[in-house]
Image (cartoon, rainbow, N blue to C red):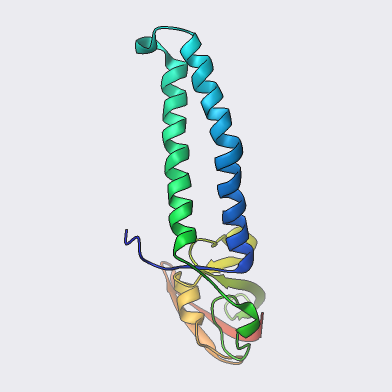
Length: 159
């Protein structure tokens, strides 16, 4: 993975990553250190499953902390006040009409780090997100999916 690749984030997404990093550094590190200390007190480290598990958890924790620090270091926070609501860009909230099912759906276009389809947040790198970028209200977007092609009409763009 290219470590210099920018991470696009909304202000909310940046704050969530900062909060997670803080929690991991302040709270989780202490918890894991305490577990290691308790496991060491059990004696013989060569056959100490609690110690092995705690050390493994510590390694995963430090890896996540490093990943978050790197993501925040290269993060580009989207200035949502400068989003042109006449075209779809990262940070925009888009209301679409699914032309096959005649349903309205709403997505927020976010950077890949924040993507959560269950919360209606789709990545600018996803097939749908990629096709929507730069589109305007009234345009029809065709997205290739494994089952064929989905067509959406852009109904509204908000920020």
